[in-house]
Image (cartoon, rainbow over all chains, first blue to last red; front, side):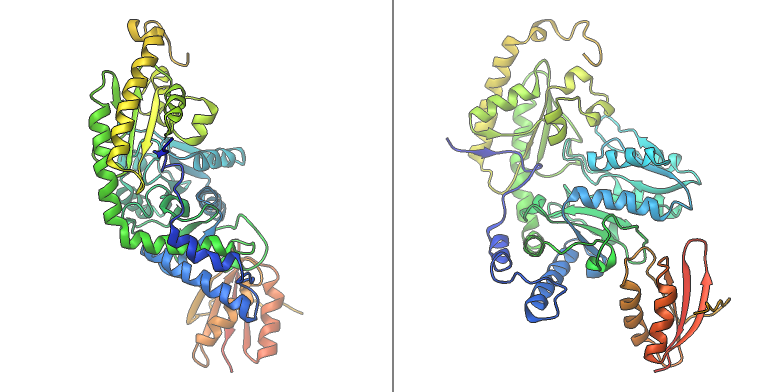
Length: 394
Length: 84
């Protein structure tokens, strides 16, 4: 059975050129970058080249890139590190309801340590209102974090406007750009952010490599103490092969970004056109201002999990909301915050596209998903009667 | 060793290494002093207690002048004059 992969928001295949670049560092070039001999120097040079390539992808200086093991680590590092470095100035944080769990759960962990967190609401398209950010800032506010684009609904947030508001009030601003970096232009200078998280496997790099951009001169408390790797800000012997793979993937993304975006956008629009023609299937997220390879929907009267299992049986791999939400079978907080009812939110499905997807893949998913929706609705007690008296949370 | 406290020193260059791990204070110190002109003063901002001992010792060893320490709320300001 041919596999048709529509879950690129979860992860992507490794680019063959990134794998080729990594291979020497998985085999003979095993030196520790802190070693003073050639083997160490080679590894150090490779990490520094990757730092330059990664910096170029987001228009940063190489010294502003701190490699991490994942986007989640970069998010934890940013929120905890920036908040703790500023705790004498105040203990109020602002995050949005569109955030990934690596921000919301980090914010909650800080709540337990005495910080006060404001969660910004979303409009029906999942957009954060910059005016709401302005209103939420008080004299205790030290850090604001708003996601660049949600991998659940695809909406691109007005980061530049929000960052400017934060900057005017002297508040550090971080954005989780894991789903955007390498997929759409991300320029830290243009966005005016103090910190920005990214992850290699979101742009055809390897898993196990991420990075935090931290504007020169910004203070941050380390998450991981130890040696002087990453400028004394993130200890631990560098994952040299993964970092090299990230650098190569970043260089490829710079070169191929426009072509990749055009390819997935064309397929995305076909999926959105086709699926929203089905009765009671609604697009989630912003209709225009969204990730080029992201199509997300709620299908009334049926469970997302049911659709996913039946699609998987046909070789079509997709997701329902975020990977974590999907596993936990919970209503998505992002969809709930957008005003989608709890019952409807269970019918969430996300189709995220990549370079391996073809027109034929789109034809297949449109046909299969239409048939699956019909079959599941035939079995659903709500399909004929509507949601009836079903209340929130049921 | 007796700590020497100073106030109102006007540095030529300031380097902020607050929250950076040991021994970044020595690596940055060496790198930054190398970039100073002779007689210029570096202000090193750090929260690392060990720097209070290490930086004067480094100055002694290298022949540069340790001007002293000023305390901010949650970090130290160390002043080093390039002499060699």
